[in-house]
Length: 398
Ligand SMILES: Nc1nc2c(c(=O)[nH]1)N[C@H]1C(S)=C(S)[C@@H](COP(=O)(O)O)O[C@H]1N2
Ligand SMILES: [Mo]
Image (cartoon, rainbow, N blue to C red; front, side, top):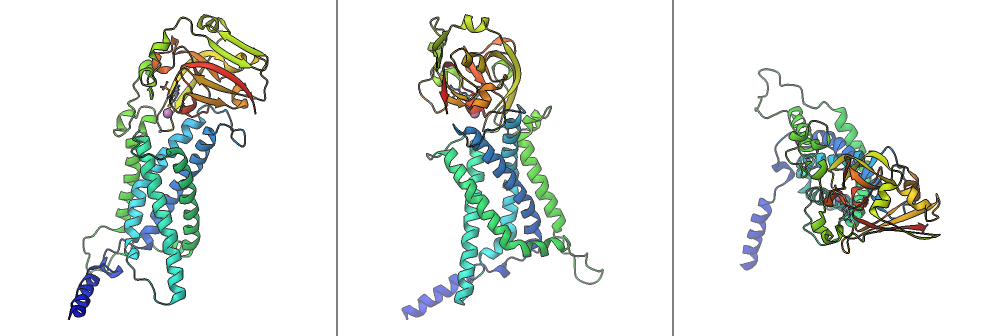
């Protein structure tokens, strides 16, 4: 009796679980999945390559010397990183929709087929999980929202490898299906009059066009602020482009807890090197040979702004304490807490004449929020490493 009731309940549940046949839209399936998949693959490849470069740029001692020019290199690659990740959001949603019926396909019974099925499903679970994680954490990061306690940089980097690795595997496994699907026409030929009815559903071509448009709108709404004249289109951009001296601010002087130190007449820049320690007052720094350069602040979060910075080339300060062309420098802020209170400038960046200890922005002394009395600004470098409120520069031999 009980057993019969149980069997009845099981049968009713079973009947409610959708089967691949329950999804009737022709728009799903390989022809849609392959076409959206191509662009999703491109977006992930761009995000992965630019992500690796960004990661290498933030290492204290990268394995190979990264180029110091063109000065906008980091700005451009980081904008591409955020744009490709943003474009991937609508692409991934349409792609998941197009293959969703396969998720509820019943596993085969034969042991060999079952093992293959589970391996395939496992690799797809890894790919989808890692891809969703990357897009969600990346978007939250570009919105400056950190609702988690793990280390974003390390986790996003590690899962970038997982996502890209499982993507390569997925493409390799699906290549025959993809080729077949791409060789087929996007839409079936229109039904001959009198035979078969046009059910009024949109065509696959319409669906694909709507997908491309969504991806473009998502990119423009978040990133157009980076393009000249298009800031007003970027309704979802986090940075307004406003800030003292025309450059936005991430961490203000108040936020960094340095306000009380900025007016100190006893402030000296300490420069430590092989031949000793030299201290410079602000007046002395202003009296040294100055150099100006138009350089961007390019935040890892995706916003950027260029300014005309002027000050003393770092290499001139390093030369005064016996530093040589092979030496890195560590730049330390007056800030006593916070992850970005110091940064390391690799030797080839130290030697670039545009790597400045900046004293002015747009011809005016630095605003307190931009790092008064002086800050580091170097070409092709992530914003997080452009240390503000500098107190000490130390020459270190790698
Ligand atoms: N000392 C110190 N320097 C810092 C930071 C910081 O928190 N402390 N933030 C960095 C980050 S994340 C960025 S994007 C740039 C922003 O520079 P800006 O505020 O002048 O635009 O400063 C960098 N320099
Ligand atoms: Mo930043």
